[in-house]
Amino acid sequence: MLPEEIAQEIYNSSSFSRDFINNTREEYLALAEISEIQGHLNSLEEIFKDLSSTGMDLSSIKNAIDRGQYLIAVYSPVPGAAPAQGNPSPTGPLNGAAPAPGAAPFPGDQFNGAAPSPVP
Image (cartoon, rainbow, N blue to C red; front, side):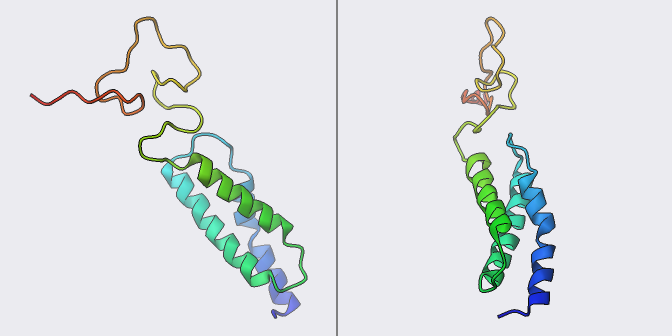
């Protein structure tokens, strides 16, 4: 079992990771942001494991872990799937705007699934 003073220091050191995850907005997240969340999540999981034998209230760490897992599950890019919310393509079906009259996906539009044009 960790001495109380060391356990408190470890808990306090988790505040940056907890705040980062808890303050991440729920929106389209770039791969770099997902990776950063994963790094903070890994740290918090280790801290939770290290402190679980103490009598400390670890609910704020557990809540941040749950939120980080949720963000990664919902916003991680999956090959061949549309983004969970929003779509960075201006002609995308999920961007919230109605397409212009006559607008159609252009060849090679990775967001709308239009097949690329064959190279002559």
